Length: 416
Image (cartoon, rainbow, N blue to C red; front, side, top):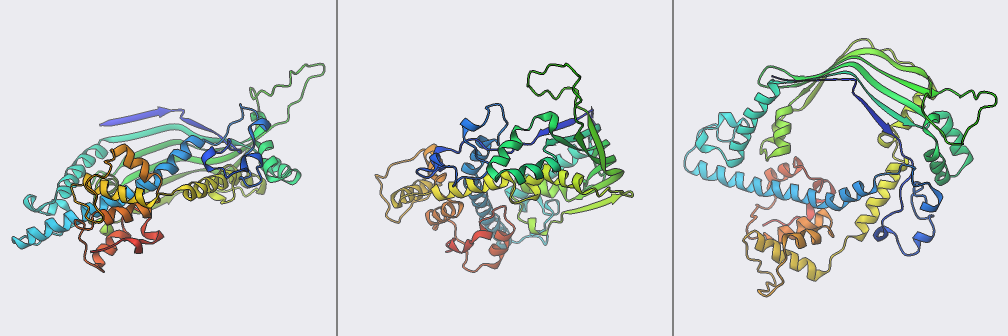
């Protein structure tokens, strides 16, 4: 049995309001001289202190550079595994198979009739069941504390300044003048049910939420200050949002979800994921300013016009606008992708074409959208990826795949 116990787990989150200077490749000509065309969270470096926290631009840019490629890779993975699964099942059927050949439970399929993915999933299921049944986690006195500007400060600041200057003033706000939002519990227990379903159980004891506003400091007569704000010894007036209560969350379908995330599951569309919630009586204090402070501290998830969301959407838009390949580069990519898969690319095939390394091909992929990558891959593999036209089973499969390409228009995918 693996029993993990942790005491006094507190996660502190410092809320940021401004962004660093945008990457040079995303700024249009002349925009660096004027911030009018930039998001309101972008403040020039000469106006802000280097010690003020900003959004993690490096992390989000790495995410954007790889997001299109990763999504295309996921869909390519699913297409190849779907074809391999269907072909394997057709061969088994031609040789005479059992009635369990297409069962969604790999344990019900005879070992000789399982595909490679069904064998892997069978092994993963056994490992996950053994691991989950022996795992237990307990967190005593755990909490998440978000530090940011309170409701009154935000309202007065945004009434006094424009959006860009307001974000800068909120970013400059010292910690001893920021409000706190605390969500915590006396006990958080994480375990799994003892049956074969291995449902995930979260048990919260004394779950509560509260908001703390800093008390004004009373400066002693004749005291000297250096002008540097210090948050040491700051006292807060705490107000309860939700009084302590008990919650039990049961997440159904954990093992199928983990298998889907790790490997290909041909029967994913037949799986069931559910959430059962049981709570004691919940008492909530609906004080407007306190509730507004909570929403402001979590506005990155609740407000589409928050500084972080506005800035990220701008980064994403500018990044997608910069993605472009020439016709020659696209043809070169098709030839090299087909070569990497052991397939001869016959369309305008040039034996003397420049051979690209995997790193060079990845660089080309980072200059395309996910739709363009999939379109070129399908073009390169049209002799091998043979999918019947208007195949409803494949359409259903795409609808349950991991990719968002289908939502954005899969009519560009060629069929053969």
